[in-house]
Length: 384
Image (cartoon, rainbow, N blue to C red; front, side, top):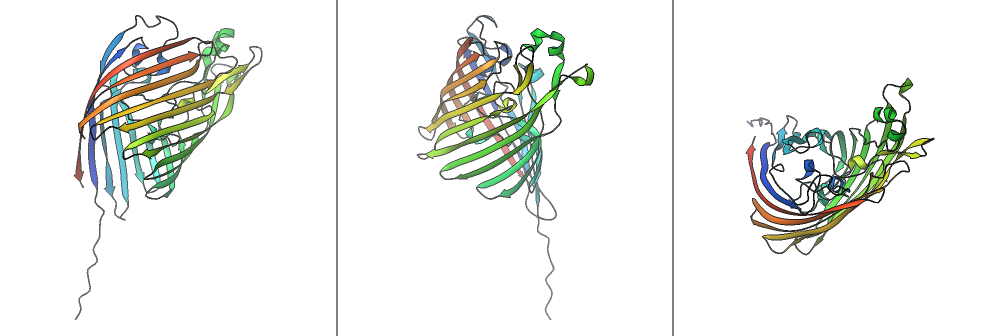
């Protein structure tokens, strides 16, 4: 008599990963930048007035780039899995600028097609970030981690298409309006009635990768303490971002990105404003500011232990008529390094950087920086 087989339940294996690194940067500036941002080179933080931040020639030592993260996947009863990532570093920004404090980078979960939490915007291509040790990186790159709800209806081993609604936010420059009416200028604020909508297509292969991303957003303002909160207005912001890399030789990469749009400065790595006044002081109008961003880098491996990254990046703002003379017009960023990795867990190297800021009125300032970095990676994986 045959015995029927007893059905068994198969569960997918899960993992829990702990990862991170301890990094210290020794930095010397030939000139001087905003002291709250001396641990990275952002062209927007370079003064265009001599002596604005004090004497030139400054040294800093920072461990703010050090990072700790947790990631993994949890098996579910129906053979699906829940992926998660939680990561932070110690580089204070915003109200914490200049401080060594906890800064959350990624906080999200992903189940099937659906992702929810904070991570890289779909408008960004993290794979065009070159092999540099400067924390902030190229000025003309799209770079933002933001809360979002994302859907990926198409995914293969090498390609995917995703759409998302992301947290709205815009940077408003009241320009000369403040001089015309100080109270009015002081009370203008963001008006965020709808989420930003982003989409991304990514494909890769042995030849490299290409990503095309787009964004559509509503950038608006209103005024506190006035009848019907007027003046108020909103404009459509949009942008296209095309980037990728080409594999060269065995390990080298030729990296490039071009982004253009209006009202997209909040998504850029550095500089610019989303909304600014145009027209005349007697008849000012809100305008979504046009912006161009460019990145070009070459990552070269001399051998298994030594590598160099060399490149240039630009942010160019099409300023409106009523922005002030000290409004950000152009940021330029260039760097070259020599990095040594005696093992996969240790990096030691030096980097030389140059940055320049140009204002709407023509004033400009630059800085040359030398950075020496030591970085120790760590990590462990636990099977669930």
